[in-house]
Image 1 (cartoon, rainbow, N blue to C red):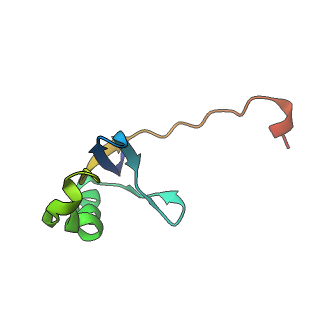
Image 2 (cartoon, rainbow, N blue to C red; image 1 turned 180 degrees about the vertical axis):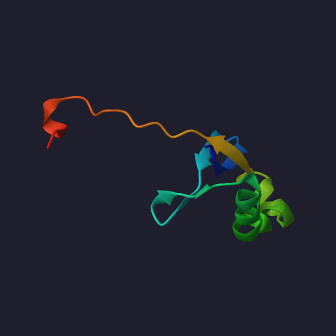
Length: 83
């Protein structure tokens, strides 16, 4: 089963191109469907589409987009992490 996350993007001369998965309450905001993710984006970040001042320099913000994510569990290396 795939999950969806919202990818926050910006591009400016000062900071270059940046992309981040959006977090809520110190955890990545994950959704079961693309539709749920799109509704979250519209509710929380819809104001960006109406704010040319945030889209232009120096901010360069873009509307977040839904992206499919894959979560992998990997063992921690080294004995100091064993319990």
